[in-house]
Image 1 (cartoon, rainbow, N blue to C red):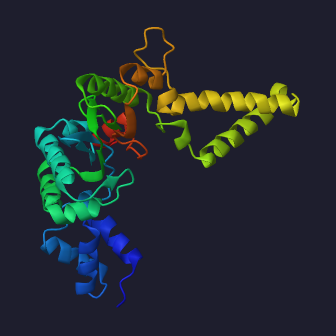
Image 2 (cartoon, helix red, strand yellow):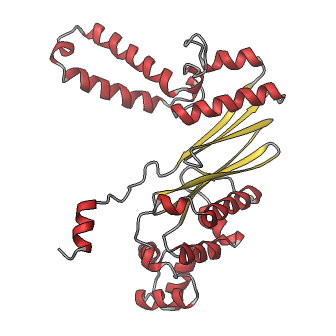
Image 3 (cartoon, one colour):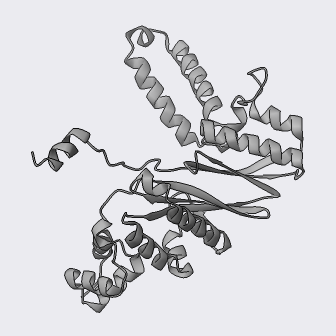
Length: 302
Protein backbone atom coordinates (compact mmCIF):
# COMPACT_ATOMS: atom_id res chain seq x y z
CA UNK A 1 0.00 0.00 0.00
CA UNK A 2 1.30 3.46 -0.89
CA UNK A 3 2.07 5.57 2.17
CA UNK A 4 0.86 9.15 1.71
CA UNK A 5 1.92 12.35 3.45
CA UNK A 6 -1.62 12.67 4.84
CA UNK A 7 -1.30 9.26 6.49
CA UNK A 8 2.04 10.21 8.05
CA UNK A 9 0.55 13.48 9.31
CA UNK A 10 -2.43 11.67 10.85
CA UNK A 11 -0.21 9.17 12.63
CA UNK A 12 2.01 11.96 13.96
CA UNK A 13 -1.05 13.71 15.39
CA UNK A 14 -2.24 10.47 16.99
CA UNK A 15 1.07 9.54 18.57
CA UNK A 16 3.37 12.54 18.71
CA UNK A 17 6.09 10.42 17.12
CA UNK A 18 8.57 11.77 14.58
CA UNK A 19 7.86 11.93 10.87
CA UNK A 20 10.37 9.25 9.84
CA UNK A 21 9.23 6.93 12.64
CA UNK A 22 5.62 7.31 11.50
CA UNK A 23 6.54 6.63 7.88
CA UNK A 24 8.46 3.50 8.89
CA UNK A 25 5.61 2.29 11.11
CA UNK A 26 3.09 2.66 8.29
CA UNK A 27 5.40 0.82 5.94
CA UNK A 28 5.87 -2.02 8.42
CA UNK A 29 2.10 -2.36 8.90
CA UNK A 30 1.06 -1.88 5.26
CA UNK A 31 -0.74 1.38 6.05
CA UNK A 32 -2.90 0.02 8.88
CA UNK A 33 -3.25 3.05 11.17
CA UNK A 34 -4.19 1.12 14.33
CA UNK A 35 -1.40 -1.38 13.78
CA UNK A 36 1.04 1.49 13.16
CA UNK A 37 0.07 3.09 16.48
CA UNK A 38 0.74 -0.23 18.20
CA UNK A 39 4.04 -0.57 16.33
CA UNK A 40 5.18 2.83 17.64
CA UNK A 41 4.01 2.04 21.16
CA UNK A 42 5.86 -1.24 21.14
CA UNK A 43 9.01 0.51 20.00
CA UNK A 44 8.71 3.12 22.75
CA UNK A 45 8.08 5.93 20.30
CA UNK A 46 4.48 6.66 21.27
CA UNK A 47 4.61 6.72 25.06
CA UNK A 48 3.13 10.19 24.92
CA UNK A 49 0.36 9.38 22.47
CA UNK A 50 -2.43 10.31 24.89
CA UNK A 51 -0.87 13.73 25.29
CA UNK A 52 -0.16 14.34 21.61
CA UNK A 53 -3.37 16.27 20.96
CA UNK A 54 -2.92 18.68 23.86
CA UNK A 55 -1.78 22.24 23.34
CA UNK A 56 1.72 22.93 24.63
CA UNK A 57 1.93 26.73 24.62
CA UNK A 58 3.81 27.42 27.84
CA UNK A 59 7.49 26.67 28.36
CA UNK A 60 10.81 28.50 28.31
CA UNK A 61 13.62 29.64 26.07
CA UNK A 62 17.23 28.82 26.78
CA UNK A 63 20.50 29.95 25.19
CA UNK A 64 23.81 28.20 24.55
CA UNK A 65 26.87 30.30 23.71
CA UNK A 66 30.29 29.25 22.41
CA UNK A 67 32.65 32.05 21.43
CA UNK A 68 31.09 34.05 18.62
CA UNK A 69 28.24 31.62 17.95
CA UNK A 70 25.05 31.23 19.98
CA UNK A 71 21.80 29.32 19.80
CA UNK A 72 18.38 30.07 21.29
CA UNK A 73 15.70 27.39 21.62
CA UNK A 74 12.06 27.30 22.64
CA UNK A 75 10.64 24.19 24.25
CA UNK A 76 6.96 24.13 25.17
CA UNK A 77 4.99 22.53 27.96
CA UNK A 78 1.29 22.59 28.73
CA UNK A 79 1.50 24.57 31.97
CA UNK A 80 3.64 27.29 33.44
CA UNK A 81 4.07 25.10 36.52
CA UNK A 82 6.06 22.54 34.53
CA UNK A 83 8.06 25.34 32.89
CA UNK A 84 9.43 26.10 36.37
CA UNK A 85 10.40 22.46 36.95
CA UNK A 86 14.17 21.96 37.27
CA UNK A 87 14.09 18.70 35.30
CA UNK A 88 12.32 20.44 32.44
CA UNK A 89 14.68 23.43 32.55
CA UNK A 90 17.73 21.16 32.45
CA UNK A 91 16.25 19.35 29.44
CA UNK A 92 15.71 22.64 27.61
CA UNK A 93 19.32 23.65 28.27
CA UNK A 94 20.42 20.27 26.93
CA UNK A 95 18.42 20.94 23.76
CA UNK A 96 20.14 24.33 23.41
CA UNK A 97 23.60 22.82 23.93
CA UNK A 98 23.04 20.05 21.41
CA UNK A 99 21.46 22.40 18.87
CA UNK A 100 24.49 24.69 19.16
CA UNK A 101 26.89 21.78 18.66
CA UNK A 102 24.93 20.42 15.69
CA UNK A 103 25.46 21.29 12.04
CA UNK A 104 21.90 22.60 11.73
CA UNK A 105 21.02 26.27 11.82
CA UNK A 106 17.37 25.86 12.74
CA UNK A 107 14.96 28.66 12.01
CA UNK A 108 12.05 30.62 13.35
CA UNK A 109 9.60 28.29 11.61
CA UNK A 110 10.83 25.09 13.21
CA UNK A 111 13.22 24.12 10.42
CA UNK A 112 15.50 21.16 11.21
CA UNK A 113 13.79 20.35 14.51
CA UNK A 114 12.89 16.79 13.51
CA UNK A 115 16.38 16.16 12.14
CA UNK A 116 17.96 17.57 15.28
CA UNK A 117 15.84 15.30 17.47
CA UNK A 118 16.58 12.27 15.30
CA UNK A 119 20.34 12.72 15.15
CA UNK A 120 21.20 13.85 18.68
CA UNK A 121 19.31 11.40 20.87
CA UNK A 122 16.95 14.17 21.93
CA UNK A 123 13.92 12.34 20.54
CA UNK A 124 14.17 9.53 23.09
CA UNK A 125 14.94 12.03 25.82
CA UNK A 126 11.85 14.04 24.84
CA UNK A 127 9.62 10.96 25.05
CA UNK A 128 11.13 10.01 28.40
CA UNK A 129 10.73 13.51 29.86
CA UNK A 130 7.14 13.70 28.60
CA UNK A 131 6.32 10.41 30.32
CA UNK A 132 8.12 11.42 33.52
CA UNK A 133 6.71 14.93 33.80
CA UNK A 134 3.22 13.95 32.66
CA UNK A 135 2.63 16.73 30.14
CA UNK A 136 3.09 17.07 26.43
CA UNK A 137 6.48 18.64 25.74
CA UNK A 138 7.46 20.00 22.36
CA UNK A 139 10.72 21.30 20.93
CA UNK A 140 9.24 24.09 18.83
CA UNK A 141 12.19 25.89 17.25
CA UNK A 142 15.83 26.88 17.49
CA UNK A 143 18.04 29.41 15.76
CA UNK A 144 21.80 29.98 15.65
CA UNK A 145 23.62 33.21 14.92
CA UNK A 146 27.30 34.03 14.52
CA UNK A 147 29.32 37.21 14.15
CA UNK A 148 32.44 39.02 15.28
CA UNK A 149 30.63 39.32 18.58
CA UNK A 150 27.42 37.75 19.86
CA UNK A 151 25.47 38.67 22.99
CA UNK A 152 22.36 37.21 24.57
CA UNK A 153 19.61 38.35 26.88
CA UNK A 154 16.99 36.25 28.67
CA UNK A 155 13.96 37.94 30.18
CA UNK A 156 11.42 36.71 32.68
CA UNK A 157 13.19 33.50 33.57
CA UNK A 158 13.15 32.41 29.95
CA UNK A 159 9.87 33.88 28.77
CA UNK A 160 11.82 35.79 26.11
CA UNK A 161 15.22 34.88 24.66
CA UNK A 162 17.20 37.27 22.46
CA UNK A 163 20.41 36.93 20.46
CA UNK A 164 22.26 39.78 18.75
CA UNK A 165 25.23 39.34 16.41
CA UNK A 166 27.41 42.20 15.23
CA UNK A 167 30.58 43.05 13.35
CA UNK A 168 33.20 45.78 13.52
CA UNK A 169 33.86 46.00 17.27
CA UNK A 170 34.38 43.34 19.93
CA UNK A 171 35.55 45.25 23.01
CA UNK A 172 33.69 45.40 26.32
CA UNK A 173 32.00 48.69 25.44
CA UNK A 174 30.59 47.16 22.26
CA UNK A 175 29.35 44.10 24.15
CA UNK A 176 27.67 46.28 26.76
CA UNK A 177 25.98 48.36 24.06
CA UNK A 178 24.76 45.24 22.25
CA UNK A 179 23.41 43.81 25.51
CA UNK A 180 21.47 47.03 26.01
CA UNK A 181 20.08 46.68 22.49
CA UNK A 182 19.17 43.06 23.19
CA UNK A 183 17.11 44.29 26.13
CA UNK A 184 15.47 46.81 23.78
CA UNK A 185 14.61 44.00 21.37
CA UNK A 186 13.05 42.00 24.20
CA UNK A 187 10.94 44.97 25.29
CA UNK A 188 9.86 46.50 21.95
CA UNK A 189 9.96 43.51 19.59
CA UNK A 190 11.20 45.11 16.36
CA UNK A 191 10.51 43.15 13.16
CA UNK A 192 13.52 44.43 11.21
CA UNK A 193 17.05 45.63 11.94
CA UNK A 194 17.32 48.26 9.17
CA UNK A 195 14.73 50.06 7.07
CA UNK A 196 16.29 48.43 3.99
CA UNK A 197 15.21 45.05 5.42
CA UNK A 198 11.52 45.95 5.20
CA UNK A 199 9.76 44.08 2.40
CA UNK A 200 7.65 46.17 0.04
CA UNK A 201 4.85 43.64 0.54
CA UNK A 202 4.76 44.56 4.24
CA UNK A 203 4.45 48.27 3.43
CA UNK A 204 1.80 47.58 0.78
CA UNK A 205 -0.21 45.48 3.22
CA UNK A 206 -0.10 48.13 5.95
CA UNK A 207 -0.96 50.83 3.40
CA UNK A 208 -4.09 48.94 2.34
CA UNK A 209 -5.16 48.64 5.96
CA UNK A 210 -4.66 52.37 6.54
CA UNK A 211 -6.62 53.18 3.38
CA UNK A 212 -9.51 51.01 4.53
CA UNK A 213 -9.47 52.65 7.96
CA UNK A 214 -9.53 56.06 6.34
CA UNK A 215 -12.45 55.20 4.07
CA UNK A 216 -14.40 54.00 7.09
CA UNK A 217 -13.92 57.35 8.84
CA UNK A 218 -16.40 59.89 7.38
CA UNK A 219 -14.20 62.90 8.24
CA UNK A 220 -11.02 61.45 6.73
CA UNK A 221 -12.83 59.94 3.74
CA UNK A 222 -14.02 63.42 2.75
CA UNK A 223 -10.49 64.84 2.51
CA UNK A 224 -8.79 65.40 -0.90
CA UNK A 225 -6.78 62.46 -2.29
CA UNK A 226 -3.45 64.29 -1.96
CA UNK A 227 -4.15 64.99 1.70
CA UNK A 228 -5.05 61.35 2.25
CA UNK A 229 -1.82 60.22 0.59
CA UNK A 230 0.18 62.53 2.85
CA UNK A 231 -1.58 61.25 5.97
CA UNK A 232 -1.00 57.63 5.00
CA UNK A 233 2.67 58.27 4.21
CA UNK A 234 3.12 59.92 7.59
CA UNK A 235 1.47 57.03 9.39
CA UNK A 236 3.58 54.48 7.51
CA UNK A 237 6.75 56.36 8.46
CA UNK A 238 5.64 56.45 12.09
CA UNK A 239 4.90 52.72 12.00
CA UNK A 240 8.35 51.96 10.53
CA UNK A 241 10.00 53.83 13.40
CA UNK A 242 8.31 51.32 15.70
CA UNK A 243 9.15 48.11 13.82
CA UNK A 244 12.69 48.94 12.59
CA UNK A 245 15.24 48.50 15.39
CA UNK A 246 17.68 51.17 14.21
CA UNK A 247 14.91 53.76 14.01
CA UNK A 248 13.39 53.03 17.41
CA UNK A 249 13.99 55.51 20.21
CA UNK A 250 16.63 53.97 22.46
CA UNK A 251 14.84 53.04 25.69
CA UNK A 252 17.68 54.29 27.88
CA UNK A 253 18.13 57.57 26.02
CA UNK A 254 18.50 60.38 28.53
CA UNK A 255 16.82 62.89 26.25
CA UNK A 256 14.09 60.45 25.22
CA UNK A 257 14.91 61.13 21.56
CA UNK A 258 18.15 59.35 20.65
CA UNK A 259 17.49 56.45 18.30
CA UNK A 260 19.26 53.09 18.46
CA UNK A 261 21.48 53.72 15.43
CA UNK A 262 22.81 56.96 16.97
CA UNK A 263 23.36 55.23 20.30
CA UNK A 264 25.50 52.54 18.64
CA UNK A 265 27.43 55.19 16.69
CA UNK A 266 28.22 56.93 19.96
CA UNK A 267 29.86 53.72 21.18
CA UNK A 268 31.66 52.80 17.95
CA UNK A 269 31.17 53.97 14.38
CA UNK A 270 32.33 50.53 13.18
CA UNK A 271 29.78 48.59 15.23
CA UNK A 272 27.12 47.07 12.97
CA UNK A 273 24.37 44.64 13.95
CA UNK A 274 24.24 41.78 11.46
CA UNK A 275 21.55 39.51 12.94
CA UNK A 276 18.97 39.32 15.70
CA UNK A 277 16.61 36.66 16.98
CA UNK A 278 13.79 37.11 19.47
CA UNK A 279 11.84 34.11 20.76
CA UNK A 280 8.86 34.70 23.01
CA UNK A 281 7.28 31.58 24.47
CA UNK A 282 3.99 30.68 22.86
CA UNK A 283 3.86 33.58 20.40
CA UNK A 284 1.49 32.78 17.57
CA UNK A 285 0.25 29.60 19.26
CA UNK A 286 -3.24 28.81 20.42
CA UNK A 287 -3.46 28.55 24.17
CA UNK A 288 -5.89 26.38 26.06
CA UNK A 289 -8.55 28.49 27.74
CA UNK A 290 -9.65 27.23 31.11
CA UNK A 291 -13.11 28.05 32.47
CA UNK A 292 -12.74 27.91 36.24
CA UNK A 293 -16.49 27.77 36.95
CA UNK A 294 -16.96 24.91 34.51
CA UNK A 295 -14.00 23.04 35.98
CA UNK A 296 -15.38 23.35 39.53
CA UNK A 297 -18.84 22.23 38.38
CA UNK A 298 -17.31 19.25 36.57
CA UNK A 299 -15.43 18.17 39.69
CA UNK A 300 -18.60 18.45 41.76
CA UNK A 301 -20.45 16.26 39.27
CA UNK A 302 -22.86 18.98 38.20
